[in-house]
Amino acid sequence: MRTLDDRLVDLSLVELFHQADDVRNLEGGTPGEKVAVVEFLLAICYASGTYPESAARWPAWVDRRDALRPAATWLAERPKDEVWDLFHPVEPLGQNALLAPFLDEHGAGPAQLVIEQVGDYNQFFDHHHLEHPSPLPVAEAFRAMLTQHVYAPAGRARISGKETLGATITNLAATRLGTRIRVIALGASLGETLRLNLAPVPGPPGTLNRTWTAGMERRGFTTKPTGRPVTGPADLHSSLGRSILLRPTRTGEHVDRVLLGAGELLALTDEHLQDAVYTKKADGTVKPLWASATRAVWREAHALYAAVAEARTRSGANDGGTLYRRLALFPAAGMAPEPGQQPARRIELWAVGFVARQTTGIAWVDSTFPFAPGLEARLYLASYRGSAVAEFVAAALLKAAFTAWTVAYPNPKPTDKSDQIARFDVRREHWRATGEPFDLLMEETTLGEDVHASLHEYAVSVATAARRFLAEHLAGLPRNTRGTKTRAAALRRFDTELTMPTAPAELRGETP
Image (tube, rainbow, N blue to C red; front, side, top):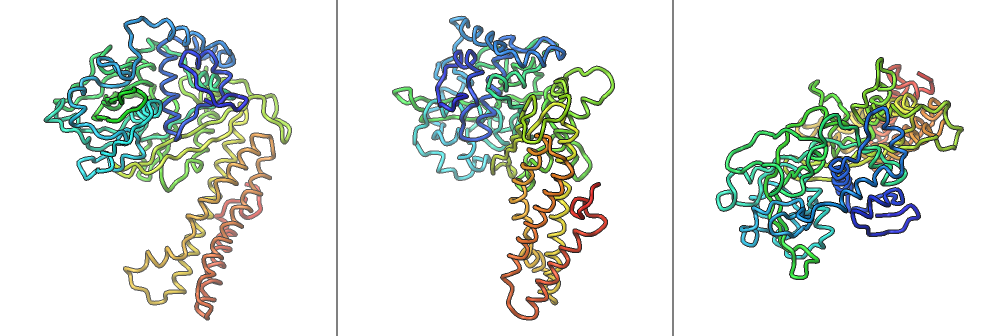
């Protein structure tokens, strides 16, 4: 953990909840690992009864620095027969002890525990790298295990069902957050972050999934199960998405062998997706925002702000039923802050997802968006128009690439078309470079700068950079007549597109 004065410290769970407001954030190797630890801490809060009484009291509860103390007390007073030992023979924390008889013979090296090191989750293929015996420190193994429970993709487990617990233990379903973006509201400290993401509970909080072999009856592995109902938020945030068992080294300081199979399946409803942002797919269906290797999260930022703006303007009482409705419960600032000043309350919306191509993990994606109560309409306008400008510039670059292709290749073979157009396509460079000016646009909006003036500056910056990328790409053409014509035609097409009546007003120097 990193404290507010920027010191790195190690704290026990009890100490962490006592000192949560002195801790700035959690340390972790990946965004997904940090989310997984936050999920575990939220589960403990719910299980201990540490959450706001009602939506109406939530804003004031978020500001209470002592609000998480009950979680620390609950942990310190747990019955002696409740085991929190990662290597307990019967109730290993977060694991399935039923795998113990098979661990030595069928297990793999600890690399199998780390999502980024597994490779293809269809693990019946050749996976020699998973046999590497290099031990993993216990703390890293614990965080990697939590990440597997939360984010692991679908596939086929390396374990043999016939020789272990049953045929369906090989059927790895995508875990709870493995197919969508998770949005977490970040405060100035870890304590505030946890309180921002704890919701009132209308029914029972549910049971903490401390281990597979204690508590509720879980699935077997002889037949494919149906998703079990969620008993409450403590159950949801600590669900065991994988059956995992870890073997410690002789000193107990490292993990040297791992066995991993299918875990729990949950029957989720909208109440279990309180942070989800819904977007429309190309076929018209609506689903929670998902991670993409080709579409950055910031291009959908307006959906987050829209969810808060809608909650603030909707008629009737705000039930605080989603993260965004609760954010709308904070009183709006009487006026926007003066330029350069911080708003009265500053929150970051942190969006995290894991990109997988079929059964192979590709990359973590994450973006952070500023938010201040009362400014959601301005933030929505800036993010929506900013995304529209970037999308239009990208389309203009593609049309310029097509124009360059028609001049450079007057008699192309149909089979060569895609590769030839790709030679002139600089959209990848455009998208890579646009994230930073977009972040600046959102920051200026949060600080009270004029939205339309900031959008004009942003549009000029994005269009200028895109034209430069195109010109640099075209500079490699031969210095002959055809090369000169190709460069001129492509740049002219790009410039013309940005002045079309259909172009966003900001690109034409106008205000929409």
